[in-house]
Length: 334
Ligand SMILES: [Zn+2]
Image (cartoon, rainbow, N blue to C red; front, side, top):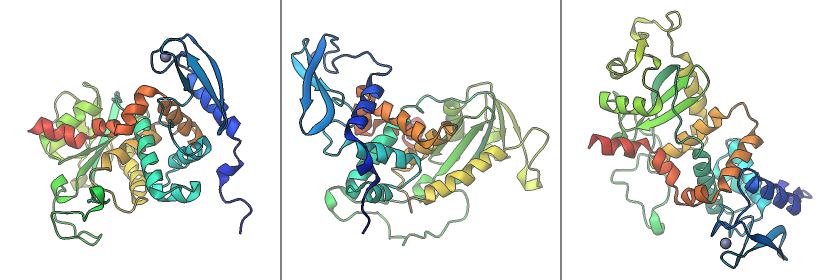
């Protein structure tokens, strides 16, 4: 038996609280989260949470603390659990792995992971690429992984495919559990990854308008949906004629991105089509902040999670829903 079961047992609770206190008020005015009054004063401590300070607001005559209205409010677990879980999430761990390493139930860690992914997506909501942008598409098998609501038997609407779906010939489609993913890689660094229903001209035009600024230079392969794009300076290489590079024109950066994305998605051992945009969005966040260390990325997520406006939306899963290009494109097509 090891002497210590979990890493976070070494963390000092008061240091964690002081760190969270600094993060919460670093770029925000110190004020009451309920009525925004700045007329507040210290109001003691909690005997069961060492280091957590309490404040009294004279505006609404109520108390609050550093965690009120954040993602960590009313959590039974200590902040060291949360900090370690966020760090492991940035090291691309699955929620089951996080549950084992942190010592919480799988359902708890699954919920935390989704809240934290949503908080991370708040950095990626309005990202648009410019300059020289490469694009490529990939089809990924997704399914209906997960439990039915309220624990009943899940109705798939089809025969179970026993985890290894036989691939149908031709391009994939959302309705055939094989949606397309489009990767946009700017040569200046940032990337955008989108999940779309299909690969028709209309869909690709809408996806491009979302991801890339009008007038940018686009390099793609010779797929007809790219060739019909309007509003961009477009050049392509013809893979069917074994042409992969022509001077500056190639899409090797976008293809390279898929060689990183595929192992990342494989980690989760099957993905639900409902959750795919969330995983892609988090991968996009990790890649766009790749110059930072995993803990610096975790700190960005923690800082977003401490913002009351972001926290309430993250609990509802709103960022993934906004990021969900399936829905966006479906309403536009209908
Ligand atoms: Zn107040």
